[in-house]
Length: 226
Image (cartoon, rainbow, N blue to C red; front, side, top):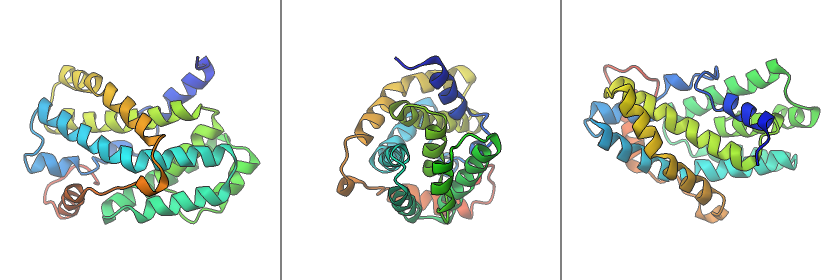
């Protein structure tokens, strides 16, 4: 059973109030709403579930590898998977998003003085820090179990998508909570899959999402930065 201290630290790390700017990004969802692909609770759930399938095939397994690398203080593995993740961001918006949020979370960990010298040394060697790297770093610094950290990251991502739908579709607050509750099983499945994929099975292939992101970069009216 997870210790109370670890649980509280995970809740803080996965909280929407964490000052890393997550609320300013929609990860392509705003463009989908603008185009009519997401228009109600049902289409919102379908969108988020399909997006999570993409995350389960790449971002989540990369996070899992980063969590393991920080646990063993393997700086070379941290650098490798950080570089791979940044290279896989295939639009300017998606790349800027992960670098900005990674920078903010890394700075927060430093200001709170959470990390030991071995972790600080690994992070000092990273030329750029994407969000999964910063999240894994923070989880290790806070002694959050790896499995719990993976679930926390996935829940945080889904919660942010639901909040975008609540504000922008728009959906009501009850509809948003019902949507979030219905996605718990999808989150669990994504976490389980992320822990089983081999390196050569990882893929972020989602051309439709990439096109939406590029359209969003020139979208006339927008609230979010991605």
